[in-house]
Length: 294
Image (cartoon, rainbow, N blue to C red; front, side, top):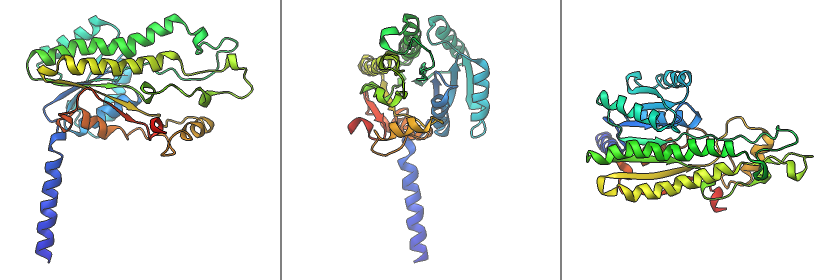
Protein backbone atom coordinates (compact mmCIF):
# COMPACT_ATOMS: atom_id res chain seq x y z
CA UNK A 1 0.00 0.00 0.00
CA UNK A 2 2.84 2.37 0.82
CA UNK A 3 4.41 1.83 -2.61
CA UNK A 4 1.06 2.30 -4.38
CA UNK A 5 0.38 5.46 -2.41
CA UNK A 6 3.81 6.88 -3.27
CA UNK A 7 3.35 6.15 -6.98
CA UNK A 8 -0.11 7.75 -6.93
CA UNK A 9 1.11 10.91 -5.20
CA UNK A 10 4.14 11.15 -7.47
CA UNK A 11 1.99 10.77 -10.62
CA UNK A 12 -0.52 13.28 -9.30
CA UNK A 13 2.25 15.79 -8.67
CA UNK A 14 3.55 15.40 -12.23
CA UNK A 15 0.05 15.87 -13.62
CA UNK A 16 -0.46 19.03 -11.60
CA UNK A 17 2.88 20.37 -12.78
CA UNK A 18 1.99 19.61 -16.39
CA UNK A 19 -1.39 21.30 -16.00
CA UNK A 20 0.29 24.58 -15.11
CA UNK A 21 2.98 24.50 -17.81
CA UNK A 22 1.02 26.91 -19.99
CA UNK A 23 1.04 29.50 -17.20
CA UNK A 24 4.83 29.60 -17.33
CA UNK A 25 6.06 33.02 -18.51
CA UNK A 26 9.79 32.42 -18.10
CA UNK A 27 11.64 34.25 -20.85
CA UNK A 28 8.75 36.68 -21.42
CA UNK A 29 8.71 40.39 -20.62
CA UNK A 30 5.57 42.21 -19.48
CA UNK A 31 5.24 45.99 -19.45
CA UNK A 32 2.71 47.35 -16.96
CA UNK A 33 1.43 50.92 -16.97
CA UNK A 34 0.40 52.56 -13.72
CA UNK A 35 2.50 49.88 -12.06
CA UNK A 36 3.19 51.77 -8.84
CA UNK A 37 -0.48 51.79 -7.84
CA UNK A 38 -2.49 49.34 -5.76
CA UNK A 39 -3.51 46.99 -8.58
CA UNK A 40 -0.42 47.65 -10.69
CA UNK A 41 1.78 46.10 -8.05
CA UNK A 42 -0.51 43.09 -7.81
CA UNK A 43 -0.38 42.57 -11.57
CA UNK A 44 3.41 42.78 -11.45
CA UNK A 45 3.58 40.33 -8.56
CA UNK A 46 1.37 37.87 -10.43
CA UNK A 47 3.51 37.95 -13.56
CA UNK A 48 6.74 37.72 -11.59
CA UNK A 49 5.31 34.67 -9.85
CA UNK A 50 4.75 33.11 -13.29
CA UNK A 51 8.36 33.71 -14.24
CA UNK A 52 8.15 36.85 -16.36
CA UNK A 53 10.43 39.85 -16.30
CA UNK A 54 8.35 42.95 -15.60
CA UNK A 55 8.82 46.51 -16.73
CA UNK A 56 7.13 48.81 -14.23
CA UNK A 57 6.09 52.16 -15.69
CA UNK A 58 4.47 55.13 -13.96
CA UNK A 59 4.83 58.90 -13.72
CA UNK A 60 6.67 58.94 -10.39
CA UNK A 61 10.26 57.77 -10.12
CA UNK A 62 10.09 57.51 -6.32
CA UNK A 63 6.86 55.48 -6.43
CA UNK A 64 8.43 53.11 -8.96
CA UNK A 65 11.50 52.66 -6.77
CA UNK A 66 9.27 51.86 -3.81
CA UNK A 67 7.24 49.35 -5.86
CA UNK A 68 10.42 47.68 -7.14
CA UNK A 69 11.79 47.35 -3.63
CA UNK A 70 8.53 45.86 -2.34
CA UNK A 71 8.27 43.37 -5.22
CA UNK A 72 11.90 42.31 -4.84
CA UNK A 73 11.10 40.77 -1.45
CA UNK A 74 9.45 37.87 -3.28
CA UNK A 75 11.21 37.93 -6.67
CA UNK A 76 14.65 38.35 -8.19
CA UNK A 77 15.20 42.11 -8.46
CA UNK A 78 17.02 41.60 -11.78
CA UNK A 79 13.63 40.69 -13.30
CA UNK A 80 12.10 44.01 -12.18
CA UNK A 81 12.83 47.00 -14.44
CA UNK A 82 11.46 50.51 -13.98
CA UNK A 83 10.87 53.36 -16.42
CA UNK A 84 9.18 56.70 -15.80
CA UNK A 85 6.53 57.02 -18.50
CA UNK A 86 3.53 59.30 -18.95
CA UNK A 87 1.04 57.28 -21.01
CA UNK A 88 -0.68 60.44 -22.22
CA UNK A 89 2.49 61.51 -24.10
CA UNK A 90 3.36 59.64 -27.31
CA UNK A 91 6.97 60.81 -27.15
CA UNK A 92 7.39 59.38 -23.64
CA UNK A 93 6.07 55.98 -24.75
CA UNK A 94 8.29 55.96 -27.84
CA UNK A 95 11.31 56.84 -25.72
CA UNK A 96 10.73 53.87 -23.39
CA UNK A 97 10.13 51.55 -26.35
CA UNK A 98 13.40 52.64 -27.98
CA UNK A 99 15.35 52.30 -24.74
CA UNK A 100 14.04 48.78 -24.16
CA UNK A 101 14.75 47.78 -27.76
CA UNK A 102 18.30 49.11 -27.48
CA UNK A 103 18.95 46.64 -24.67
CA UNK A 104 17.42 43.73 -26.59
CA UNK A 105 14.32 43.68 -24.40
CA UNK A 106 11.19 42.65 -26.32
CA UNK A 107 7.81 43.42 -24.76
CA UNK A 108 5.74 40.24 -25.08
CA UNK A 109 2.89 41.32 -22.82
CA UNK A 110 1.34 44.76 -22.38
CA UNK A 111 -0.88 45.43 -19.37
CA UNK A 112 -2.77 48.72 -19.81
CA UNK A 113 -3.47 49.49 -16.18
CA UNK A 114 -2.85 53.26 -15.86
CA UNK A 115 -5.89 55.23 -14.80
CA UNK A 116 -7.07 58.10 -12.68
CA UNK A 117 -9.65 56.75 -10.26
CA UNK A 118 -11.49 59.79 -8.89
CA UNK A 119 -12.47 59.17 -5.28
CA UNK A 120 -15.91 60.28 -4.16
CA UNK A 121 -15.34 62.54 -1.17
CA UNK A 122 -18.03 65.19 -1.24
CA UNK A 123 -15.76 67.84 0.21
CA UNK A 124 -15.94 70.47 -2.51
CA UNK A 125 -18.42 72.62 -0.61
CA UNK A 126 -21.23 74.47 -2.33
CA UNK A 127 -20.41 73.33 -5.89
CA UNK A 128 -20.07 69.55 -6.15
CA UNK A 129 -17.76 69.18 -9.16
CA UNK A 130 -18.13 65.40 -9.39
CA UNK A 131 -21.71 65.89 -10.61
CA UNK A 132 -22.29 65.78 -14.36
CA UNK A 133 -23.71 69.33 -14.43
CA UNK A 134 -20.53 70.75 -12.91
CA UNK A 135 -17.85 68.34 -14.10
CA UNK A 136 -14.81 70.28 -15.40
CA UNK A 137 -13.80 69.73 -19.00
CA UNK A 138 -10.18 69.80 -17.83
CA UNK A 139 -10.79 66.74 -15.66
CA UNK A 140 -12.62 64.97 -18.50
CA UNK A 141 -9.68 65.52 -20.83
CA UNK A 142 -7.04 64.56 -18.24
CA UNK A 143 -8.75 61.35 -17.17
CA UNK A 144 -9.49 60.35 -20.77
CA UNK A 145 -5.88 61.02 -21.72
CA UNK A 146 -4.54 58.69 -19.05
CA UNK A 147 -7.18 55.95 -18.87
CA UNK A 148 -8.24 55.54 -22.50
CA UNK A 149 -5.96 57.45 -24.85
CA UNK A 150 -2.98 56.11 -22.91
CA UNK A 151 -4.09 52.53 -23.53
CA UNK A 152 -4.52 53.29 -27.22
CA UNK A 153 -1.07 54.90 -27.48
CA UNK A 154 0.70 52.09 -25.62
CA UNK A 155 -1.09 49.49 -27.73
CA UNK A 156 -0.15 51.40 -30.87
CA UNK A 157 3.54 51.35 -29.95
CA UNK A 158 4.04 48.02 -28.20
CA UNK A 159 1.26 46.09 -29.96
CA UNK A 160 2.59 47.13 -33.37
CA UNK A 161 6.01 45.82 -32.40
CA UNK A 162 4.54 42.50 -31.26
CA UNK A 163 2.79 42.11 -34.60
CA UNK A 164 5.70 43.31 -36.74
CA UNK A 165 8.28 40.69 -35.83
CA UNK A 166 5.94 37.72 -36.19
CA UNK A 167 6.32 36.52 -32.60
CA UNK A 168 2.94 37.81 -31.44
CA UNK A 169 2.07 38.68 -27.89
CA UNK A 170 -0.72 39.63 -25.54
CA UNK A 171 -2.44 42.82 -24.46
CA UNK A 172 -4.49 42.99 -21.27
CA UNK A 173 -6.66 46.03 -20.64
CA UNK A 174 -7.67 46.58 -17.02
CA UNK A 175 -11.26 47.80 -17.13
CA UNK A 176 -13.79 47.64 -14.27
CA UNK A 177 -17.14 46.17 -13.35
CA UNK A 178 -18.36 49.70 -14.19
CA UNK A 179 -17.62 48.83 -17.82
CA UNK A 180 -20.77 46.69 -17.84
CA UNK A 181 -23.13 48.62 -15.56
CA UNK A 182 -23.64 52.14 -14.32
CA UNK A 183 -22.42 53.31 -10.90
CA UNK A 184 -25.05 52.98 -8.19
CA UNK A 185 -24.79 56.52 -6.88
CA UNK A 186 -26.78 55.61 -3.78
CA UNK A 187 -23.69 54.08 -2.18
CA UNK A 188 -21.98 57.49 -2.20
CA UNK A 189 -24.81 59.52 -0.65
CA UNK A 190 -24.11 61.78 2.30
CA UNK A 191 -26.75 62.20 4.97
CA UNK A 192 -28.24 65.67 5.29
CA UNK A 193 -26.95 66.85 1.91
CA UNK A 194 -29.32 68.21 -0.74
CA UNK A 195 -29.70 66.11 -3.88
CA UNK A 196 -28.02 68.64 -6.17
CA UNK A 197 -25.00 68.72 -3.85
CA UNK A 198 -24.59 64.97 -3.44
CA UNK A 199 -21.19 63.62 -4.55
CA UNK A 200 -21.21 60.98 -7.30
CA UNK A 201 -18.85 58.71 -9.15
CA UNK A 202 -17.87 60.94 -12.10
CA UNK A 203 -18.96 60.21 -15.64
CA UNK A 204 -15.38 59.75 -16.82
CA UNK A 205 -14.71 56.49 -15.01
CA UNK A 206 -17.57 54.52 -16.58
CA UNK A 207 -16.97 55.98 -20.03
CA UNK A 208 -13.25 55.18 -19.92
CA UNK A 209 -13.74 51.62 -18.70
CA UNK A 210 -16.46 50.91 -21.27
CA UNK A 211 -14.16 52.42 -23.90
CA UNK A 212 -11.38 50.04 -22.87
CA UNK A 213 -13.67 47.10 -23.57
CA UNK A 214 -14.40 48.54 -27.01
CA UNK A 215 -10.68 48.99 -27.61
CA UNK A 216 -10.13 45.39 -26.51
CA UNK A 217 -12.53 44.06 -29.12
CA UNK A 218 -10.99 46.20 -31.85
CA UNK A 219 -7.42 45.16 -31.07
CA UNK A 220 -8.41 41.50 -30.75
CA UNK A 221 -9.32 41.39 -34.43
CA UNK A 222 -6.79 43.88 -35.75
CA UNK A 223 -3.62 41.87 -35.11
CA UNK A 224 -5.10 38.39 -34.77
CA UNK A 225 -3.33 37.14 -37.90
CA UNK A 226 -0.05 38.29 -36.39
CA UNK A 227 -0.55 36.32 -33.19
CA UNK A 228 -1.45 39.26 -30.95
CA UNK A 229 -4.37 38.61 -28.62
CA UNK A 230 -6.19 41.21 -26.54
CA UNK A 231 -8.53 40.71 -23.59
CA UNK A 232 -9.89 42.80 -20.74
CA UNK A 233 -10.22 42.17 -17.03
CA UNK A 234 -12.96 44.00 -15.14
CA UNK A 235 -12.34 43.89 -11.39
CA UNK A 236 -14.95 44.76 -8.80
CA UNK A 237 -14.37 46.98 -5.79
CA UNK A 238 -11.24 46.25 -3.75
CA UNK A 239 -11.24 46.77 0.01
CA UNK A 240 -8.62 49.35 0.89
CA UNK A 241 -9.69 50.82 4.20
CA UNK A 242 -12.93 52.44 3.02
CA UNK A 243 -15.44 53.62 5.62
CA UNK A 244 -17.85 51.14 7.20
CA UNK A 245 -20.97 52.78 5.77
CA UNK A 246 -19.66 52.70 2.22
CA UNK A 247 -18.49 49.09 2.56
CA UNK A 248 -21.87 48.02 3.94
CA UNK A 249 -23.76 49.72 1.11
CA UNK A 250 -21.52 48.23 -1.56
CA UNK A 251 -21.37 44.70 -0.18
CA UNK A 252 -25.17 44.63 -0.01
CA UNK A 253 -25.05 44.72 -3.84
CA UNK A 254 -22.62 41.79 -4.11
CA UNK A 255 -23.86 38.18 -3.86
CA UNK A 256 -20.62 37.05 -2.19
CA UNK A 257 -21.27 39.67 0.47
CA UNK A 258 -17.83 41.29 0.49
CA UNK A 259 -15.38 43.41 -1.48
CA UNK A 260 -12.39 41.84 -3.17
CA UNK A 261 -9.01 41.38 -1.54
CA UNK A 262 -6.26 43.10 -3.49
CA UNK A 263 -4.56 39.81 -4.45
CA UNK A 264 -7.67 38.03 -5.75
CA UNK A 265 -7.13 39.08 -9.37
CA UNK A 266 -3.62 37.62 -9.65
CA UNK A 267 -4.64 34.24 -11.05
CA UNK A 268 -6.85 35.89 -13.67
CA UNK A 269 -3.94 38.07 -14.81
CA UNK A 270 -1.68 35.03 -15.02
CA UNK A 271 -4.31 33.21 -17.08
CA UNK A 272 -5.00 36.08 -19.46
CA UNK A 273 -1.31 36.88 -20.04
CA UNK A 274 -0.17 33.31 -20.64
CA UNK A 275 -0.73 30.48 -23.10
CA UNK A 276 -3.30 29.07 -20.67
CA UNK A 277 -5.73 31.43 -22.43
CA UNK A 278 -4.29 30.91 -25.91
CA UNK A 279 -7.74 30.59 -27.51
CA UNK A 280 -9.30 33.49 -25.63
CA UNK A 281 -9.42 36.74 -27.58
CA UNK A 282 -11.52 39.89 -27.39
CA UNK A 283 -13.22 38.97 -24.12
CA UNK A 284 -14.02 40.99 -21.02
CA UNK A 285 -13.66 38.89 -17.88
CA UNK A 286 -15.82 40.40 -15.14
CA UNK A 287 -14.71 39.47 -11.59
CA UNK A 288 -17.06 41.33 -9.27
CA UNK A 289 -18.30 38.78 -6.74
CA UNK A 290 -21.47 38.42 -8.82
CA UNK A 291 -22.60 42.03 -8.58
CA UNK A 292 -23.25 42.32 -12.33
CA UNK A 293 -25.61 39.32 -12.38
CA UNK A 294 -27.77 40.19 -9.38
